[in-house]
Length: 328
Ligand code: MRU
Image 1 (cartoon, rainbow, N blue to C red):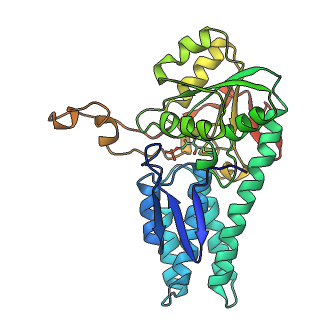
Image 2: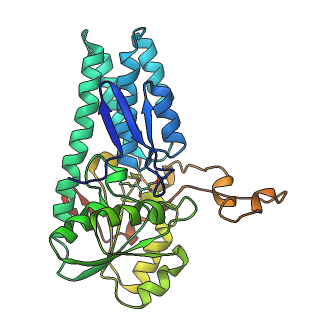
Image 3: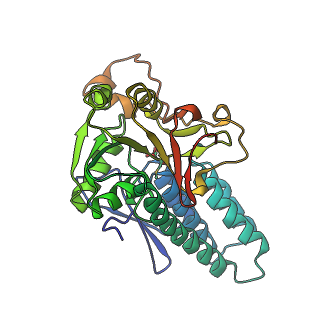
């Protein structure tokens, strides 16, 4: 179990740990309806592909709890939640399950939807454990690893995916150290991964994203573990913007590059990464990193939230079902 919990389902309310406020403040958002959940997802108060799916499932359960809930109203809530973020597949796979329950419920809709949301949450926690075991089985004692973005307890229903492997390696005393990239522009690595590591006393060193090549050149990194937002049938993988560059640099340095994700992130409908929709976010996310820049008129900004790493850069996929090596 992790000390860090991003969501709590309490007395038919969803408590969401506001990740925008971390690491400075612990603030909980109390969601009583699906619209609050949808806004929390859009604003990154709750983020990370698996936990977005879990939060959205609870959002549907909240919609069903309303005294005036109708099947059409719950379907509208699902449609609203589906529009929150386009890239991560867990949102879509979780809402597909909720839709299936809604369509096949014979009465007791609210109870069944709540049960399904809890099941999605529990299964994700179980998958994290299985993933971590498979990931750790690849490691040797005393390894130093590099990770990107935040893929920990904050991003999942359990101990995390890539960071879950790192966490278990620490518990088993085979991890020497993890290097975490800052992950501009939103800072999931600096603000969230470093904070999570501090909670669990995992030895962690923060670097800026532009230090990756130099760090790899030192030869001290044994492997890279990253998460995923959506994986196409051919293994092309979308993850936080910057992951592709990291994969190219790892290949150049001869360092294994592992994608760590549950099966709920694999979108078998898509032939390749070219079909993945990449979310573009507001310019302010980049501009506010440079004080005063928001006041400069006419600054053009491109802010894709994710990129696609071609499958041929990926050494293996670590899932709850085992380790998948090429050919994928
Ligand atoms: O924009 P975010 O913070 O939701 O992006 C998160 C990532 O890209 C993670 O690496 C991914 O969702 C995997 S989380 C286990």
